[in-house]
Amino acid sequence: MTNRRSFLSTLMAGPALALSTSVRAISPRKTNKPIIISTWDHGVPANEAGWAILSAGGSALDAVEAAARVPEADPKSRSVGLGGRPDRDGFVTLDACIMNEKGNCGSVAFLQNIMHPISVARKVMEKTPHVMLVGEGALQFALDQGFKKENLLTEESEKEWKEWLKANPPAPKQKINIENHDTIGVIALDEAGNLSGACTTSGASYKLHGRVGDSPIIGAGLFVDNEVGAATATGWGEAVIRIAGTHLVVEYMRQGKSPETACRLAVERLISKNPDYRDIQVGFLALNKAGEYGAYCIQPGFDYAVYDKQTPNKLLKSGSRL
Image (tube, rainbow, N blue to C red; front, side, top):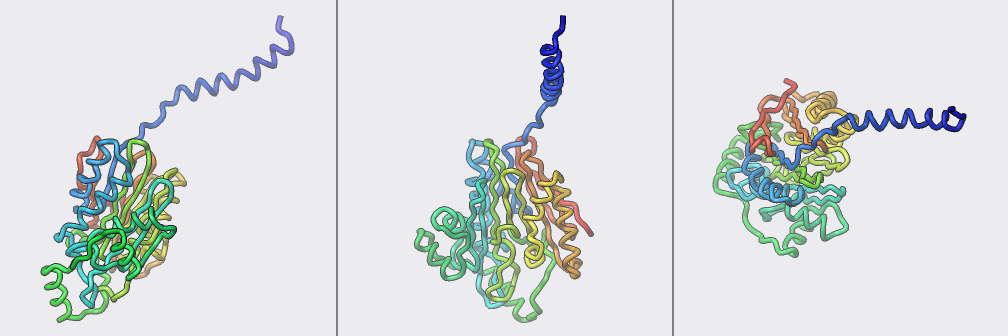
């Protein structure tokens, strides 16, 4: 005979049993890790350096720093580090930032004569209570940390600058595509499931002396939220800063949008705030916590590199608004 107590126990247990059965029936989505993604075709050699760390079980933070250092040391990468194009006064000034899975970050801006600003940015993050150091203060900090002071203006970049001086056009808002790379942004997800990112640049060619773009600004050139995903930006930094671009991309992913959709929505927001959008290029690149990635830009021509277990360092084309 069923008494009242056993009847109530059955009613209470039923939904719980049904719920546990349904939970067991759902297979959790497998995370694509490790993975590293980088902007532009100079992201391919950068990814090689980062993948060597990730595939050995290393951290995403170490991977993105190692990746960013590759174009910084390559004089053929004309918008990053050594060989970067100077400002209109002939000075190579560098900007960089780095951010880890804990939300810790470091940044340098208007740094001169130091080949690896990304590593100086990491030192700012790890050795100081600050987020950003700039100009002479950033240089002195770098020297105190053991970095070597050296001339970054190569003969090729100096020759181009002098040719530009003859024409002396106004401050450019050039389309920054495969012919004129801008920045390298790198994002990685390691085997432990942690995200980190890095961004480094010599900035817009022949900019006004003292100009700083989006690349060293957390939430503009780079943003990492280990619960959701990470994003980096490339292109005309002023436009990115106006909408806190990478923070916006991550927030769209927090709402459940895919990385590519999040990048597209950020591009559309940027277009709505910048009436001159047809004359500039901006691209966003994003990676979510599941290891899914995507990119989107204003103008055609933005490519990015991906390296994971399924994709051995492949260069992909971004979708574009125009």
